[in-house]
Each structure stands twice: as C-alpha cells, then as structure tokens.
Length: 235
Image 1 (tube, rainbow, N blue to C red):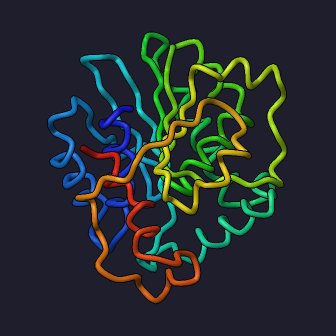
Image 2 (image 1 turned 90 degrees about the vertical axis):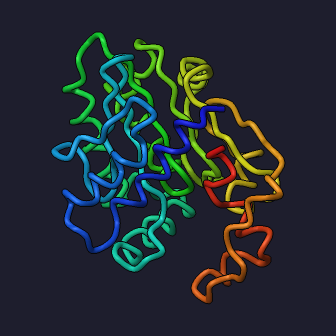
C-alpha cells in the first residue's frame, strides 16, 4: 500500500475552507514537501488536486471525498445518493469530475506516468472516471500507473465493467479498506474493477472522540467512524 497515495488523497480535503486558493495550495505543498510532489494551482480545484513530481516523472490526480464541513456538503451528499442508486453516470457532480480529469490527462506529457487516488466518494468518482473516460484509462494502463482508492463506497446498482475492462485494469486499480469500515463493506461483493485489499484498523488511530450529530445516520459506532478515516492509511 502506498502511504504517499493516501497522503495525497487526504490533502484534497485541504482544498476546502475559506482561505484563498493560493493559501490552500501553499499549505498543501508544505504538508507534502517530503514527497517530491507539488500541487499545481492552475490545474487544481475544490474537487480535484493535480500534483506533479518532475524527478520521477509522475502526475498524480486525487479526487476529494465527501465534504462534511458545509462548503460543498449538499452537492457531495447529492452525488453520494446518486452513486448509491447506481445513477452516478447521470450525476452532474460525477460528470464534472469525469470531464475535468479527462481534460487534465490530455495535457500530461507522454513520458510521465499517471497515478490516481481517492477516499470514500473520491474513490467512487475516480473509478467512475476510469471506467467512462477512455483517455484516462489508456494513460493509466499504458504508463504503468496505479489508481488507489481508500475505504471507497460501492453500489450493487452500478453498471458493471465488462470482462475485458476488468482484465485490462486488474493490475492498475487497488481498493484499500479497513475491515471495520461500514462504507466500503459492500465492495467485498460489489467490487467492479481492480483488487480489494483489507487491513486491520490501527488501534492508535482514534481520530474522533464522539460521533458528530450530522454523521449519526451513517455511523452506528465510534469504531466505525474511526475505521473510515484516511488516517488509517497515512503512516
């Protein structure tokens, strides 16, 4: 499992908030200074973080998970619902992420590898993009890249990938999940493309001391809430 991929996925949440975009990007680049990546402001937004590593010739595109801070909560929850119903292809939020990622990938130099990551809803939009945008899929496969999801949601109603597509992506997509995570539990049976790898929750990763009121309808216990956190994957 790539600690860096999880860290970059986690940084997408720092694109939220009320600070200027310049300040948000500056903070992100300070946080990841040891990774070799830098976030590119002109190619990043509140949904997608575009990161560049010139030393290793890698572009990393990270999709943000559900915003619980309020900035984009309503839009994200609506997209989550569409995904749960298997209607993500008709979701404006999913379409925006598909189209944005496709446009970004078109500008990646031929000699650069494409890696991707996403947590929770971000995992779902990442997989949706790979399945439905051929140029993204082709770049990922031909460059030997890796798309890593963390505690990603899945739906039994989503149109499944063809056998051919599953075969093409079997070595390029990995879904990492914590065994106590409720959100990703269905992926054991409903995983569409790539591999699923399950891990034990880190006992020292107790991020929340209580369940926020707006999350009580999703998580039945504090253990489930902590299991869903990206901090389980970030070293």
